[in-house]
Amino acid sequence: MPSAVSPSSAPPNAATASGAGDRPAPAAFLFRFELNLPRLGDGVLEPPFDLPDAALLPHFGGLDDLPQFAEIRVGWTPAGLAVAVAVSGKSAPPEASAKAVGAGDGLHLWIDTRPTGTSHRAGRYCRRFALLPRVGKVGKAGAFDVPMMKGGEASVAEPLPIPLKATVERGGDYRLAAFLPAEELPGFDPSRSATIALHTVVIDGELGTQPLTVSGEFPTGHDPSLWTRATLGG
Image 1 (cartoon, rainbow, N blue to C red):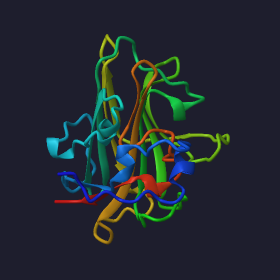
Image 2 (cartoon, helix red, strand yellow):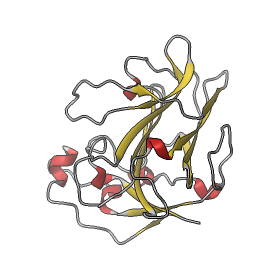
Image 3 (cartoon, rainbow, N blue to C red):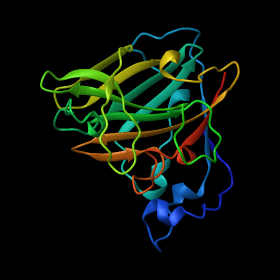
Image 4 (cartoon, helix red, strand yellow):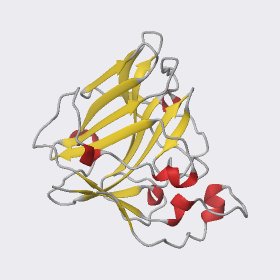
């Protein structure tokens, strides 16, 4: 089960990082959350799959009344990470431009396989993924490796040939499941390092944005010290 340790003092650059000036820091920023991700087996999981409730991520953003319209589940095997998202409450299908997948409707996932908890710069063990139910005019599901850039710098996302399956209902609600193999996660080795850090954001042009913790006012897109630590449990 997820847990939160005692409230932590905001770092010296908290106001600058959030762009909040003299506004109070969000409640979710004042805690250091810890997750326990369940082990799901030994090898690659082929979607579609139903992950157990033990894999359900809490909505820490709810502490600040941020919207919740998605359920996200994450688990692991020695071969990689299994991820599933279910989005409800839609009245139109999800959309994503093939030229701007980093802003497309779907699940955006940041992973650090060797977190220090102090580094503010994404290093070689950090990756960002976009897992999208419908991309481009064809509307086919896709997974992408999205470079982590500061200040809106131009970047090109690379498609990933990973196991992925999405189902979009007529009203627009959807379910997506994907398996991120260890080859796409530099440093992923549960036998040597049983802790990772992660951050999730579900983007939806109709329903809004659902972050795991704090909103986009904070530099969660490239600062791994703001991501949530997770133990690769049993």
